[in-house]
Picture 1: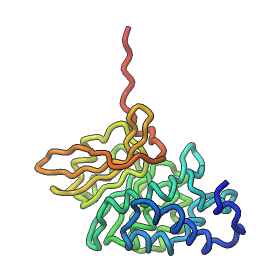
Picture 2: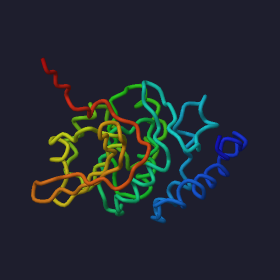
Picture 3: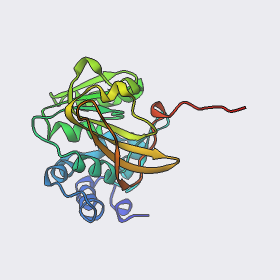
Picture 4: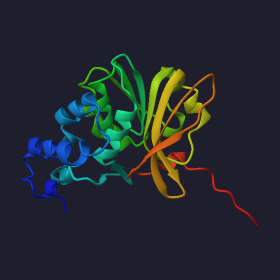
Length: 223
């Protein structure tokens, strides 16, 4: 049990500070803008009511439908490596209950948040609709959102086995894509940049991030 779990369930401000000091600062979450956003965004609002007391533990939290809110460390590492700019237009794929979208909304110009689970879309609406610079789209994750392209940055908030070309094509030339990478069950964070139509992911950290079934490679059968 972490120290965060021993805090009073209603002392979320203290839990948030504890998360910053014990989970983020000792690692490579070093961007002060990212840390600032995570320090003021109420993570407890983005988990089911039954899990609010666990909002700041350093593990994934179930949000229903077989999906999870990834650990804050994984989110912080992704956003730090993304080198966010205030004029970025960002596509967030797998927005879940909206936590990463809310963090991004306080930093970048506009966020298009794509989620295919209707129940999660409904949960996130109450918080994201009030932000003003987030467009919430209910759509298949593996399709991204071509109607809003091109994007300066695409973040897939989960681990993938592959990134469809259809999604890479939605980046600007020079645009960045960050995601978790599922390499035979080993989870890593990875980043890539689209240059003259070419794109490749390069892992940069091993961490806990949940796989997204929508990005699994088709199974091949041999006889």
